[in-house]
Image 1 (cartoon, rainbow, N blue to C red):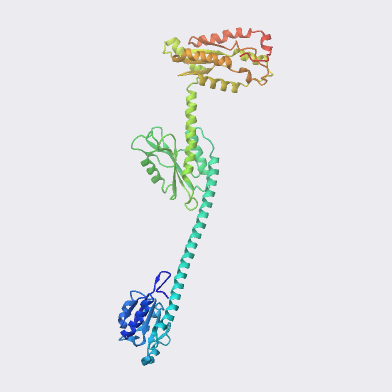
Image 2: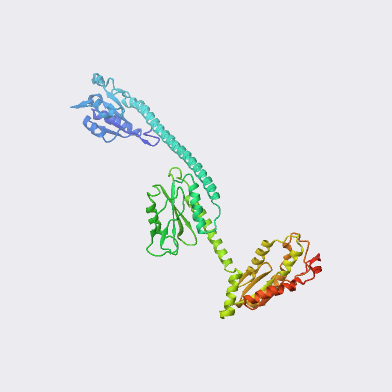
Length: 475
């Protein structure tokens, strides 16, 4: 028998009348590795039990009461928290009557090898203490497993919810579609959030043209809330600043709802261009990936800005014939600054080919897009392209690159595969000598005369040359 079981320090309290008996039991217990606390009076034990509870208490029946104190009346005895055994001798065996009815662990007869009797009581109590500790440990393990199981179940539920919401996000984003301008973006956001069943209401803010006021779009939507305009302290060219976002959120609280989500749509600046403030049920959208939705909306918005910038860049190199004639006449009549040289790409021969081959379709749109795209790639500086009907292109070459670009223009035109835009590409033109590229003076009248006066020359090309097919393209 050892004094400790499963790391438990076994504690014994002795309440004995005779010090000699106490020493005998205490020495014997020390040999077993158990140290006992000795009390000679009941009041000392009473006070001691208030601060700790020994695993076993050995009580001399001669000390069962003292003054107003009665051992069986101690709170830890009454609630069965204290475990105890009784000590007696033959000379006062009659006092055992005071222990009748009490739930003790045994009787130790002091006249007959009391330590051996105590060992059997100790063994029983130690086994019990160890079982209690083991049961407690098992209970703790069960509780940990239960908590872990609950956590796993909760994590699985969370994962499932997140998975469902990711699928929902993917489906929602796929329905957003493409936009081509800021106004289209606002309109699509309006449609998008109005169609979102989980959305209870929403509002929009973006900077007006002065960049000093947040405005809400004047459009209709069953869930769209009209928000008041908000003035900024200073114009903001870098998007909606943080303090303005806070103002917008504060204004929206209550107007839209209480469970608000703020989504920022970024363009080319560090601050957002568009602020969406929407109400969603918090429990239903607890794990929704708002950051990814922000990223998707910003990605589409940036794409439309990039496309818009690209279209503007291309349109800056395009001109209508009326605009071009106006600028040329300013040069001719008013001696305005002239930073270009005018080149004419004469396509009258191609027009005549289509007239002679009426059953062989020519793909005009594809031809125009490819031809202009090719010119965009070879010309430099501030050039302009202008269609003059279907039989010529007018090219305003930047004067700084005129020699270089005019040679590239002639080379490009001579190598361009005009024939492939006919439906029946097996009919190949013999040569492209009539696709003339030339520089001319900057004057609208000059261009009109050249185009109309030159038409007779083109018409004079023998039909036999136009109708005769060849089997190989002349490089």
